[in-house]
Amino acid sequence: MSNILTVQDTSLTSIADSIRKKTGKTDKLAFPAGFVSEVDSIQTGGGSAPAEEIEESDVNFFDYDGTLIVSYTEAEAKALTSLPTPPEHSGLVFQGWNYTLEEVKANADAADIGALYTTDDGATRLEIEVASESRKDMKICFYQSKQSGVLIDWGDGNSERSAAVASFTFSTHDYGAAGHYTIKLTVDDDCEVKLGQNNGGVMVLFNASTGCSYKAELLSVNIGNHITGLNTGAFQYSYGLSRVSMTKGITSIQSGCFKCSAIRYITIPAGIDTIDYETFNECYALSNISLPVSMQNVENNAFRTCQVLRRVDIKRITNPGSYVFAECNNLKEISFKEEITYIPNGILSGCRSLVRVEFLGNVKILYSYALRGCTSIKTVDFTHCTAVPTAQSEIFYNYPSDLEILVPAALADEWRQATNWTSLAKYIKGV
Image (cartoon, rainbow, N blue to C red; front, side, top):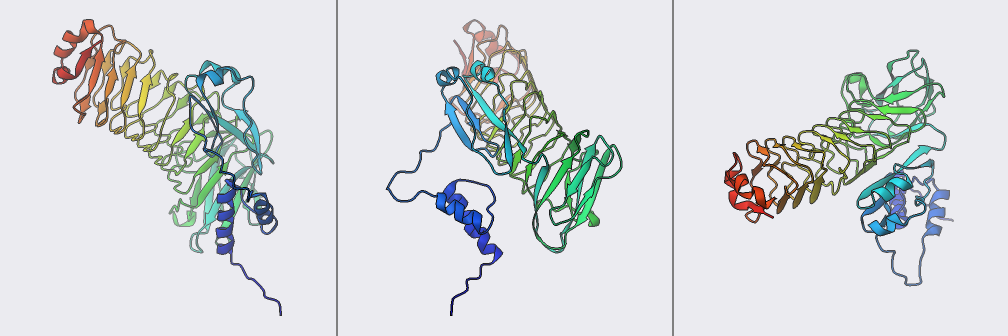
């Protein structure tokens, strides 16, 4: 009698996770053919050492999921004749980078470049997990420029057209059972869609009939064709959301859009010039972000409490807001461009790993708490100032004993005697 092997869904998931760990891929695997194909692709034997992990450098190219594809020194980046090609992903079509070759060369001293994708069928995909029988009803919300302009495929064999309104709308659905589903939104060619509600609410609501919201069920988002914007709070409090692929068609990302998500990385498309209020506030897992050269404005609390954010390119930012990087505990160095002469309230407060800050402009005013609680700060460079800037209360607080505030030698004595600088006199060093 032959033996029959029975495998539960949970076992298949564990096996798939192990295969993906070996291959380094994140795509879904179809059983059984996908499992066999991926196992066959795993190199074995030969005693060869594993490939070295790519380290970040002056210029870094990131895939949509935050994987570092390739990095270059400044000299290497300036010598490029073409941009690299990212790996292929099932169901996605690479649209290009959010930098041109010329922009890479012009910013080769420091630039993080990100990949942009659309889907192979043009549909926006929302991967969800309906966790239990009691939490299987949901609502999705978006703006459409045309009546019934979106075909909604709920991923369980049911589909419907969106409401007959050219405005904000929503659709509801009750799944028959718990499980994984992929919702597809196919937008008509003559329609434009912005994801999210009109009153600053999230796009995906579970337990919609009870008025509750179980927000860990949205896992990933692949934005497709004809999606032009993300409305206020579109994905806020989506605690399970870890991956978002962006298209070059996105022209606006509104306030609080990704607040409280588990996103580790994101590419901001070229042409967007503003990170709105609280867009990435409380994104505790966000370690990297690619801002295009068009980026100029970063509003209040935009990156507040992004506790593992390692680096952010602000050399083109001319209008930072208050508490933009407050409590970004993994930032080590930051340099403000010469156009920035007014340093907002609490802009770097509580950045406990911050070691060096450089102000390239003629700073006129530092508002309260700008560097409060930067407990590792070693050097603050004001050497580009032509006069002593006005300082409001508690610019520095809880700073180390070896702090050096570098100022022009000709201004050092006046600086030490200025209001709200006297308590810092022994740290002020003329150079």
